Image (cartoon, rainbow over all chains, first blue to last red; front, side, top):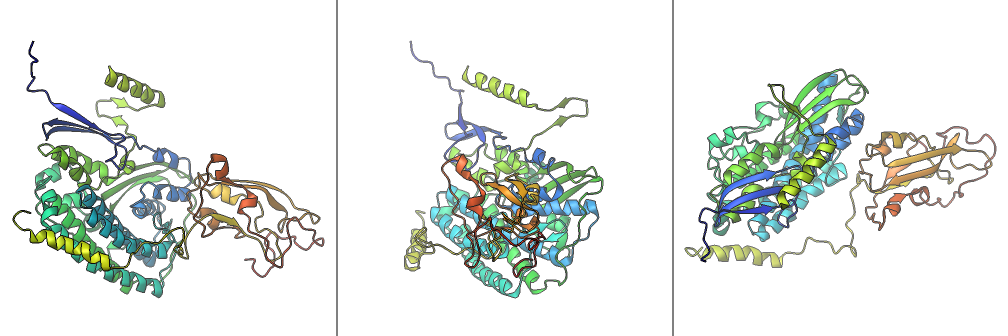
Length: 399
Length: 169
């Protein structure tokens, strides 16, 4: 008559696709033993927008605006990656002033992205005061970007073969003034995240990723650099104006969440330095060169360093005014595997912090995948198959 | 924390100090922050000083639009009923603001600088039908010295689509 207690039964916590704590749709199945996470499975794809297919039906110039809208935060770097690839295919040399302005905007965007991330991560840690302060100061750089381009996001700085606008002395002074204020505040925030005792309880020693793990899991960007992996496209394979304005790599050894905060905040100083340098030594000359309407046949690969890590573009042209195929890999997908590995052994309450530690952007990373294995096995989802799969999946869940 | 209660006071001091700072927020909609010069807001169809519409119905904006948000239908101008300089004018001009991504490519492609993304960002609607801005909503009012379109003009005075006018470029 007594109820038999099954000791080895674990409990699965499903989170998402829609969940108040998730900023974007994604699904996590977290198996817990008491409070300790024993396994985690991530399921992506809820925000797939079919952008890669959509660009195949538009011409090269229209796609610039299209691809810029993949990510609301790192929009400029998407357009830069695309422009660099297409210019490479067309064999067009971009004037140095345009390249410098591209890098300048990219670094301003990095400041805005890192500030945003520190705010979001502080919010996940329950430190909403820091979140509010950081986002207040982020408005400084948002205003600078609006002064430059007219928009707070989706700046539309790039055009194929150059940039859209020039920077005059007045704007340069506004940027310098804004950076002085931000630098002072950044010093304060570096002090907060590395010394505040309560905040360190949420971050120190949480989600430790060793250097070996970071390399094996293929992490990119600040997430990898926080584990002392020297991986930065700006340094490894410079592009655009990074030849003239080399960036220094910022590394941290500990690999925990504190290190990820420190790396990102220290990178801000590096961005301030680069922007000041570019403003002081902006090369004179044209802003754009002429681009052909049809791009020569060929394919290319383009890598740039987005604020979140390495952004990868594959562009294939068949000689018409539309691309044949564009494949995009955003940094989040590279870092996502590290989340499901790192949460194991931590408390359930630490999972949001570890997830946010990679600076995830779900709608950027959702892509269609075609399996094409060496043994000849090929799989591609059609609309009907996807629909049937969805029906089967939910039947399975409810049976 | 238990080891060092001073940490708590240090953090609270930062919070307390902000009470003495002036707020950075705007009391929208009572107070509006002006947008920057290059801001891209809702579209407007411009007029020449005499009241003629700049849009000649060429539909280059519709062709350029990456989001396929613009629909243009052209009709013939006559000197009896003239809407715009040149042969044709836009009899229908619709922008679906639910599709529009405010990239400004229509503005770049316009040969007569008729469509301009202006500074109005308060674009809201309650139905999908309302999201489609028609020509009468997009067209700016007639300037003080101008006349309402369609207007009767002397024959042969506005033959060219880009006329030699003061503000025509």
